[in-house]
Length: 357
Image (tube, rainbow, N blue to C red; front, top):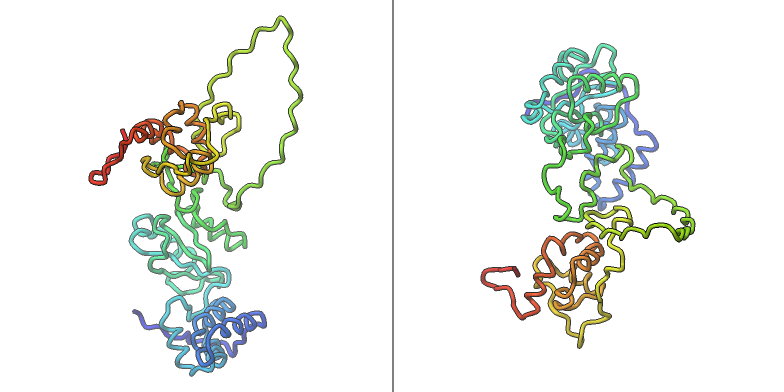
């Protein structure tokens, strides 16, 4: 580790603002009597957040607050590189990740811009005093490389163009929103989904949904107001042709689709109030059914293999759309065929783990 020393030019004094002092009193109170020194890192961070860097008067103020020798606080401040021991830019101190993934993805271009636009060397102030920069080790966003950290915000998926735009925004006081700068949602795949795209493998309710989110609206959208009741249908004239037979509804592949696409209740299978003789079949022997899904089936009124074996395809689809987050299991795992075999007394082998054909 490089030697870290205090800046040669120091302010005359330092004092916590009343707001910060109140906050630190709450932090210190978390520790047992005689252990107040445990709050040294939070106190130094508050001092740095207040002034932008940690000065010698700030170290002395922290030592007095925590009843510690000055040298002990100095040891902490000089050991951890998160503490800036020199003045930083008034508007931004930019930490550029220079670890291998970021280097491979263009961190060299970002560092070159820092040298050309801000200062020739790390920790130097720009000519106007508004900016400074440094190279840091892994900042934990390798999948979004290259990236920089400004204060508590990260800016990721940078290019030379978007990094220059970030500097312009910081200079003007209107920085872009933190996070990826190429439009993707956090670390979601940049080129679209490549796996788990089949709704039959899961409930399918969030496939591709991140693309519809606004970056600043990550909370669920409130439900829409109920639609007005439809007007009464007008009886057809006597000469009118009979209506075409309603087509069989298609399988519901994901939650949230329109009600018109759901299997109507006319296809609801015969369900039971309780298991016959109080002895339900072990539905967990159906491949893919666990305890939670068995409990859900019981709530629907499904207790026995012969019930499921007697369903037709539309009955199965009706049940499937009532399985919540397990939707798709009934169709994918062919419950009717499995249950028909289980109803004959067949059981999967514990030895080889066979599932019903």
